[in-house]
Length: 430
Image (cartoon, rainbow, N blue to C red; front, side, top):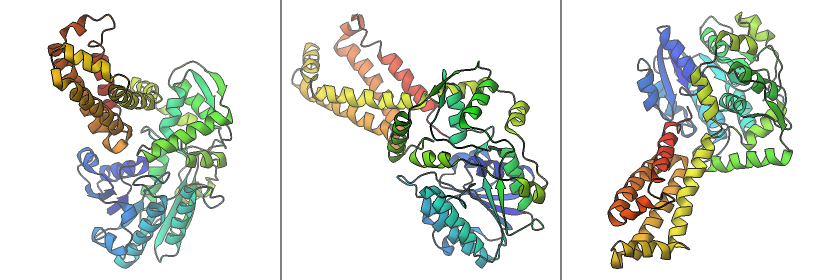
C-alpha cells in the first residue's frame, strides 16, 4: 500500500509515518521542512511543501501518482508569521481533496478537531470545520477523525505544556478551562491505520476521545505523580495573570515562536475537548485507553523529568539571553559609552576606542534581536558565542587586569557562553 501523509513531521503525522513504514507500507511524507525527518525515517519518501501555499489541485497531482490513500494530519494553532490557519486547514487541503478526486485516490482520512461542529470560537476551529466541509463535498471514500487533546510519548505543544506545568513547585489552576477527555496517541494512530484500508467504513465522522472526563488541573497533577514528584500546593491564577500569559504567548507567536499558551488556546480550552467515543469503538473495535492506564503502562524516565523541568525554563532562557545582549548593546552606545571608551584608551586603542565601543554595542544589539526571533535565533546564539570568545581574547590582550577585577567581568563570560550552549541544546520544539 502506498500512503501520502501531510503534516508528516507533527505529533500525529510522524507517528503515522513511522507505523506505516514499520509495517512495510510505502509512505510519502509531506511537511514544510523535512530534512531531519528524512534522516530519522529514511525509508519514507519526503517532500518539502508549504501546504498553505499549495492551493490548486495542480500543486498536489504530481505527488498522488500511485497513491492508494491520503492521511491529512496538517495543522496550525494560530495565525502568525508564516502560519495561516485558513490556508492550511481549508485552502491547501481543499485543493488536495480536489486533486484526490481527479487522480482517483478514493480513500482519505482527515484529522480535524473535536468540538468544531458544535462551537467554533477561533480561526483555528472555524477553518477546521471549513476543511471538513470541503472534504464532505467530494466524491471520495472519506473519514473525518476529530481527536481530543492527544497525549503520547512524544511531547510538544499542549502535551508538553502539561509536563512542564507538572514540574512547577505549585500546581497552577488556570481560570475558565473546560473538561478534557484526553486521547492516547497510540489509539489515534491505530485508528488511522485501520481506516486507510479500502474495506474500512467510509463517509463517517468519528470523535476520538478518552473515557475519562478530567480537568486540566487533574491532568497536570497526574503527570506530576507519574514523574515521581510529591503532591504540589494548588495556585489559582487570577484571570488578569492568565490573560497576561496568553498575551505574552501571542507576542512570542509574532516573533516566530509557537508557545502553547496563546489566545487560540485560551478560547479552545474554555470550550473544553469532550466527546462520545462509542461510535469510534463500534466501527473500529478500538477501545480508547484511560489516561491512568496509559501512564501506568509507561513508567517515567529521567529523560521525562529533565524535559519537564527544562520546559518552563526554556522561555526564560531565551528572554534573558535576548534582553542581555540588547541591553548591553544599548548601554554601550548610551550611558556606558564613556566608560567603554576610557577602558579602551587605557588599553592603548587610542582613536579607535570610540568606534570600537559603538561597533561592539551595535553588534550586541543585533545579536539580541536575532535571538528574539525564532527564525534567526540559532544564528544569533552562534554569533553570541563567537563574540563572547572574541571579547574574552581581546579583553585578555588589551586589558589583562580585568581578570583580577573583584566582580570578575572576564570570568562571567564563561557562564554566559554555557547559557547559550544550553539554549542551543533546547532550541528545537519537536
